[in-house]
Image 1 (cartoon, rainbow, N blue to C red):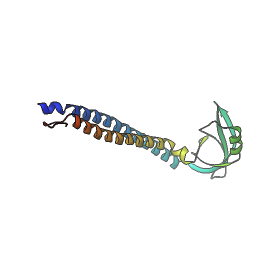
Image 2: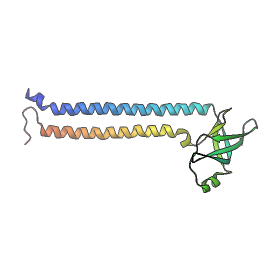
Image 3: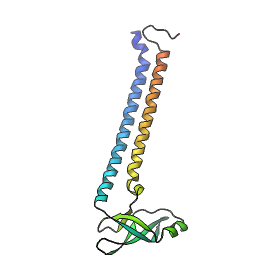
Length: 166
C-alpha cells in the first residue's frame, strides 16, 4: 500500500504530460492538415492557370495599399490587362522602380485579376503552417526532455520499495 502512495506523484505527472502531448500532437496534425489543404488548393489553381510575363503599367490605391495593374499578350495574341488580387504599402520610389518592369504572373482564363508567380506568393500559407507544426514538434521534444528530468527528481525525492534518499 505504501508503494502505491509513493508512486502517486509520478502517476499524476505522467498523466499531465500525456494530456499535454496529446493536445500538442492534435495541434501538429491540424497545422499539417491546413498546410496540405493550402498546398493542394494552390497546386490545383496552378494546373488550371496560364503563366506569362507581364509589364506593370500602373497602380491603384485602395485602403492604403497599392494594387499593381499589368499588361501582357496572352498565348492567342490578345492584349490583356489584369489587376492584382494583393496590394501592399509601397513608397513612391518602390512604385517608380516597379513601374514598367516585367513580373511573372499566372491567371485563369476569364479572370479579371492575377497572382504573382513567385515562391512566397504561391506557397506562403503552406510554409507558415508547416513551420508552426515544426515549432510545436520542437516544443514537444523540449517537454519530453523536461519530463525525463521531472521523473528523475521525483524518483530522488520519493524513493519506493523501502529505498532511502540518503
